[in-house]
Amino acid sequence: MWYTFLKMATLRYLTAGESHGKALIGIIEGIPSGLDLSPSDIDADLSRRQVGYGRGGRMKIETDRAEILSGVRWGKTLGSPIAILIVNRDFQNWSKGMSPDAEDDGSIPSVTSPRPGHADIAGAIKYGHRDVRNVLERSSARETAMRVALGAVAKKFLRAFRIMIGSYVLQIGGICIKGSEAQGAKGGSRSSPGLFSNPRSLESLHKKAEKSPVRCPDPDAEKAMIEAIDSATASGDSVGGVCEVFATGIPIGLGSYAHWDRKLDGRLAHALMSIQAMKGVEIGLGFAMSARTGSKVMDPIFYSRRSGFYRKSNHAGGIEGGVTNGMPIIARMAMKPIPTLRRALRSVDIVTKKSVEATYERSDVCAVPAAAVIAEAMVALVIADAFLEKFGGDSMEEVRRNYVSYLEQVKRF
Ligand SMILES: Cc1cc2nc3c(=O)[nH]c(=O)nc-3n(C[C@H](O)[C@H](O)[C@H](O)COP(=O)(O)O)c2cc1C
Image 1 (cartoon, helix red, strand yellow):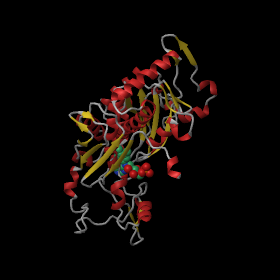
Image 2: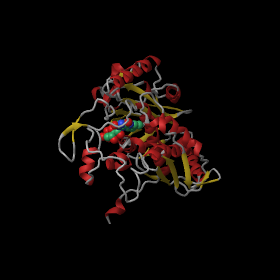
Image 3: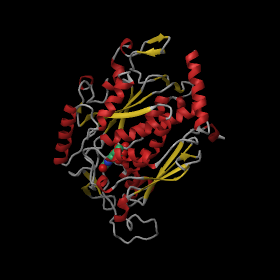
Image 4: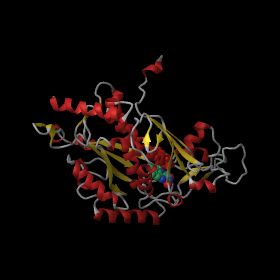
């Protein structure tokens, strides 16, 4: 049967929940037993997703906290599915309007003017909804809070094998961090400081970004980015940008060249592009490779007894032929400006068919810093899946044994 040919991911996860519904729910299946896990591991990333200059009022209402409902006992994973709940505090203001019960008390008027740049109009037509709220409640990026929670579990798993994931922002509203604009960060295709092959340089950029309200490691650019956000806010407009995600401590051999759907670069691109508002993904030097000659793009191979096979550059972003080559993984995403604008765009009422202004509901002006944190989660989920595929086991002990044995094999090669 056709479905027997479908690859079943080693690590599976699902999210559910509406933006103003009671809660977000997530299930992650495939995490081995014996991993230390507590809600605080997850809450730290949920808080990082909520901050960032340019966010709207909603994030002031929510203080996201994860409740672990299953799969963990006395602080250790059991190997069974881990279910997580994040309550939407704002639900108390929407309990009637978003009730699952068969009632409509009219407390919330239908949304009939779809917003350009959202799933509103196509979603309403496709699902036959006369109230666009039935679309926007699920297509909203509120859903990414649960992706961040599930990604935090994947990160905790990867940390046990010294794999670290981080991010920083390169560009907001056309303002680029030092050294990147000359190579085209404005257009999204560029070489960046992130292409350093040294994991410590990447981790240092991440640490600086952690202290910045726009996740920018360059203080001059940070100031100009904040001004760009202020100016968009003042004119009822919005801005997008570019952020970079990396993973260090990656062994050679995750993913595969052997079949298209095993290629790790393809899996990362899918995961990152699936984040709301992402319109471009690059791995390594990405689009900028296309304008260079081969000798300026490939990463020559060296060998020493101590380090084994190694590279001095990392234009490939740690992946060649769909397989990790032992260098840090570098991925970059371009986020479009936030589509809901205070200075509303033209739209058409889906009932009256009259020209109207698009609906405006409390909205972010810039969410690039938050997008970087969401990207970390998606990268963690993809790498954890590939890691378990290669070193899989039911317990952490078994995975560790498989991993150590593989590292010895690599050393002997
Ligand atoms: C962290 C984050 C926050 C967002 N906040 C908003 C927002 O406040 N208002 C809005 O209109 N869009 C926001 N978006 C973008 C929309 O969710 C997205 O553009 C929309 O769902 C359409 O999907 P698409 O841009 O991928 O085509 C946000 C995206 C992310 C990643």
